[in-house]
Length: 159
Image (cartoon, rainbow, N blue to C red):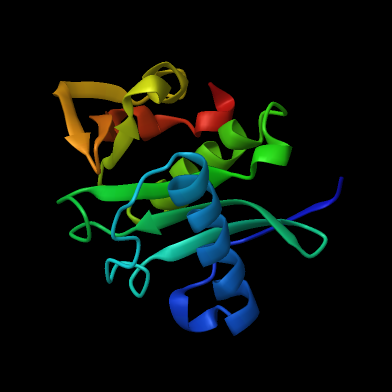
C-alpha cells in the first residue's frame, strides 16, 4: 500500500478533497459513532489538514491547529482512520505525524487534545498525559490530554 501524506492549509484543499474530508468526518463521527455535533466550527480555515490517501481514497485525517485555536496550546483534532483501514497501526502513525508537525511548526507550545475517554491508553502510549476529570463533549465521555513541551527533546518516532 503506497500511502500519500500531505498537510495542506484550508485554501490549498481542492473541492474534491474538502468533500472527502467532510464525508469521512461525517461517516465516522455522525454515522458510525452516532454523535450529532457541530462539525463546521470555523476552525478548518485556520487548521492544517493532515491527509492520508491510498490512491484516491482518503483513509486517515486529522486537523493540526495552532496555539489559540482550541486551547492556548497547539492542538490535534478530528483524528480519524476509515473503518476499513483500522487495525494496521495507521492511527498511531497519524497521531505521531501530527505530533511531529505541531512540534515543528509550534515548537514552544504543548499539544492538547480532547480525547474520547476510551482512547486514553492509546494516546498515553504516545506521550500524552491525561488532565482533570472526564467530561461530556457532544454527549460522549472525553478527557483533556496534553503532550508536554519537555517531551519534544526527541521526536516521537525515536521513543
